[in-house]
Length: 124
Image (cartoon, rainbow, N blue to C red; front, side, top):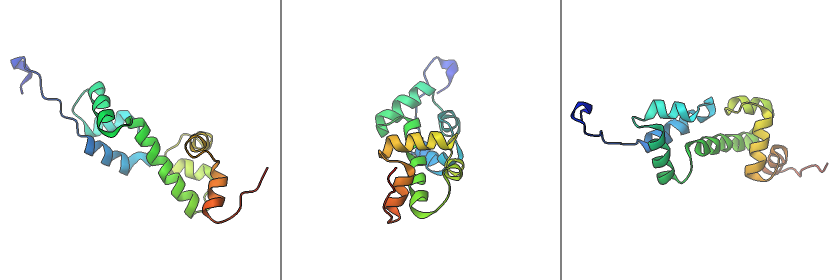
């Protein structure tokens, strides 16, 4: 609808588009603002409200979950350092990655890798 008529434009959120964008770009260090700019034609408030109603999480939580999903895959399937994984998965630093991973998995990245690769974690 035209704004000059005084009628409100319909607020249509493209949640599927946002989720696809996150899935394909989360590890590139994207922000919620970039998701909004690239996929939506609604206000930030409307996007956040509709996204949370539909998905049950905030856009930031979904981005973080996707990044951690990739970290888990790399820990299980590679010997990459935490620093390299931090860069590859869009985290600002290895410390941030380790802190968020511990909070999500209730174990350290090293212990997770050792369990997933069939080795006993070292104590200490």
